[in-house]
Length: 319
Image 1 (spheres, rainbow, N blue to C red):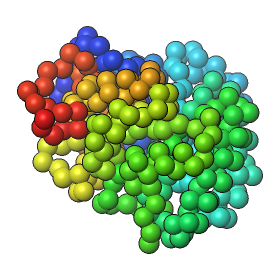
Image 2: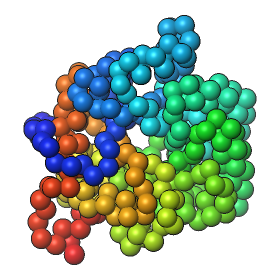
Image 3: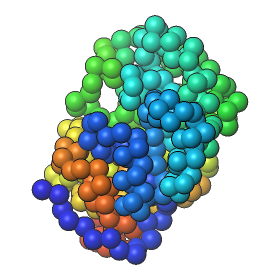
Image 4: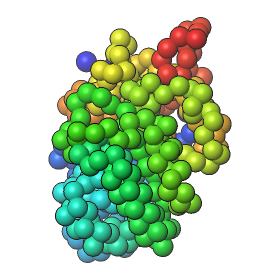
């Protein structure tokens, strides 16, 4: 059963955003936009494949942009620059045939993002791969460079995410060799790339699962964080056992999310904190109910006025 939260006027610190993965499979982008706006969200992430499908149904991207503007919603980031079917994104080290297909059709998706005024593309970096370590680095740097160059012409920046989970990895993210498993690994990869149009996407679930120390976030280069996704973690979960489906809404777990977001903000980040869940409990709700629950969770669980026990640290440990 979901904990019932009441909306309150605490300051969430960073603007609150919502990711469509929070909603049950089959929720259309129109349902998602309407439900989240009616609940109070003004900022969203989208699947760019769903936006293109909606554009086809409505007669063009201008119609989609008008609908979103009429709702008063701002699209903060999109997934699917490297697509995996009609909704989901593929990771950076997707097989070469899929990469070639994605590269050939990339301009269509970037055009759609630009039409919405969206300036961030989320890219998932593989935690494991069947490529050799040397080939993985070369391929990742080459592909990120190409993506960054192409996106820059549309006014879009890359926000690259590491996957800190050890358990429950899908086949597309698994492999025989470890690749980028934590924040240090991602920073090291982007240091090799050295492209000004690429930044970090920090996800609180992956920070927890990879046991990233707070000090490691504090020393990030100013302006290096491009986007932030948030979820809470249930009590009693070992980082190595964390799985996507265990994510819970802000305020329903043990992470000091306001404290963690304050640490990230100290690096110069002022963008949104986007709620991203893969929760069967939330998926069981209809989109309108889920949106209202998550808006209340964001107002409560991300508020800087939330009280924590003495000695509580942002990553859920004890000082």
